[in-house]
Image (cartoon, rainbow, N blue to C red; front, top):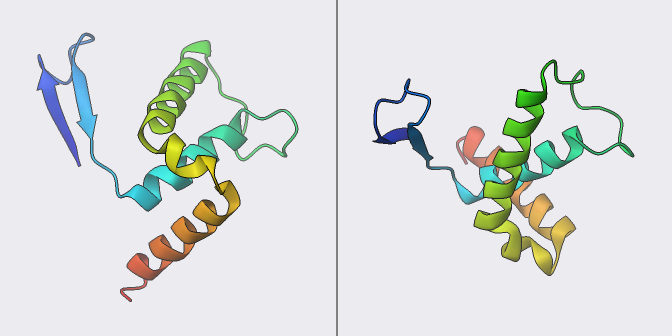
Length: 93
């Protein structure tokens, strides 16, 4: 869900609040990190514009701020739990 909180959402200065399930935030953080990791096979083709890379970095920073501490102790375990949780939600379990 997205909610405009300042100005009009189409306005360049507008801000949007994005509410995500915790598991989704963890999975997106991992995905965005892999998208920019030179040591990993690319998840998607290279971004076309420098602003796109900047947007991904900003998204990554916001996600890290939201769930980063949760991942610090056991990244692999948290990632696996998030995958399991989201799959169960998608499958209606």
